[in-house]
Image 1 (cartoon, rainbow, N blue to C red):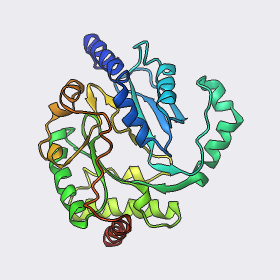
Image 2: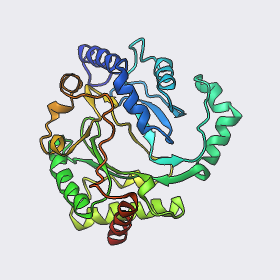
Image 3: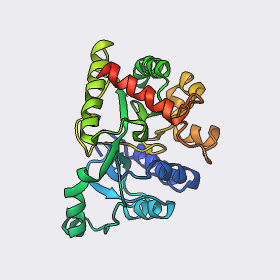
Length: 284
């Protein structure tokens, strides 16, 4: 474990185990994964890197099986849970856990080959990280981005991305009904242009819109003692790094049926779609 004290590693493993045994957290993770692949990758703190793509986690039972298969129950690996930015039409296949068998499975090969053809939409994701690797610095830019999104009244939810930044996510179902790859190209332009206009290019990660198979951290995932926590307006405005620590979340946040806290401003879906289109048109 590079740069990580063994005592700290043991603490993180214990916390990770505790978090992923907490059923309300698992339910919230599953809700976001509907129509998205679950992808389990090694924590950046792990020396030995590993990653398994394309899990189906449409129910809590499947999610629990995946976590057990990836050695979460025996407390030996630090992992991160990611999910596809792409939303897929149809069912996500269920593959074996054995990595060698998985990659040679004809169904896996076919799914990987046809992945782009299965996409019916992309979330627009503002992935905000500080070039100083300081989450409080990232929060300063995130607050300004939130003002823009609220002025346009676009539907979004905002969450801590883990240890260093924030994600603002406008869900795929509010996007214009155009070819998904054309839509992703528009998303890239929007991220690039907003970064250039407001001089936030060092904070906005454009790579999240650069490839159809891009991943982001799952909401409610555990990451090195922190939780990728969706926040309401009050929680966001009063953010501090301590308030995304796992122990603080368990003690202070009611997770049951909490959801993603998507802002809709009391507007209809049709009105929200119009707002998203105007937002994209203005910045693309």
